[in-house]
Image (cartoon, rainbow over all chains, first blue to last red; front, side, top):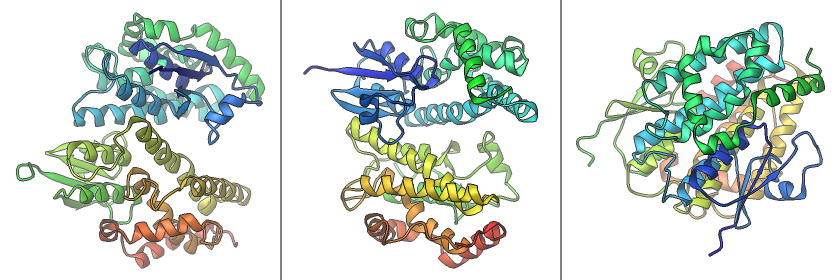
Length: 221
Length: 223
């Protein structure tokens, strides 16, 4: 049976990067279509495939859409289960992986956003919370090479896209990631040696330039 | 399998999130001990087992903690055999996860915004957001339950709408959700609240109403 896979994404979006890393890890042939999130005229395909949220990423598998990045990763892992497992097989370990992916998704994203889209006290609050999250994640990683153990797992895929935004957080938050959480930087560089990650993550400078443009557009100065 | 397993659920009886975990345990026929927590005076057991969020529910399975209500429900589904809570097909599983997340990301925040935000414009916007979300769910509901003929993940997640939302509305004087505007959801609500397992878990209505009146009253808008 033909397996047609299309991925709708937006290049600087951490969410889209997650989905892309997952398909790449599994070696799935796919077509990538770029959707510009700042073009309010969403493409007809995106509107048809994600009418509820009108957002990327959307994985379209044989014409059927799957939305929400973490849900996409789990779907990919369940369907293409013959190689590169992203979730552990033990139910307890799976629950831990889901817990930490959710933590990255809600806590880390929220705190990080405040660093570069707000100012003053709110920004400082975001920065403090972000660094706390990083330290918790460092603890969780421990001595393992990846959150998934010996190989990339669910939490690695959920979290590593943030690496492309670290320069944004550092510059606007006025702190240094290497100084605050060296093990996270070491882990991220380890992930970047994987082709799926290297191919997907955009250059930090490119993301920083975009962040400046977005801030101007949002009137944050 | 059951005899050497120790299952505890840390929770409070009025919480819709704790109810999710309880329903899942009962659907699987798991024996468990419910440990009542005080949210204003959190126990060492809670703080030790959920140091990140310090919230209920926390499931302790042979002393190993699982946190976050939907993570707990999926864990229960995978760790014990018996009636399945998530579908077996990956595409339908993805849909079930999508709609449960929709309830958490869209419905809950809208309800609390509409009911409790001190700013009137914000409350109105919350109301609008809630109406939109409910309309989407109304359209999504095709059978007796979101899961078909038996209750599943989405039904368990959305129980908040059937039981808690009407109580909150009564407490603060809102009428955004009713049988006229959302007949399918209303019918689903009656069905799910009558489900033999759900009935066992739902808390008493009156104390919950009094609780919400006490907590939210100071922010109430008039209709």
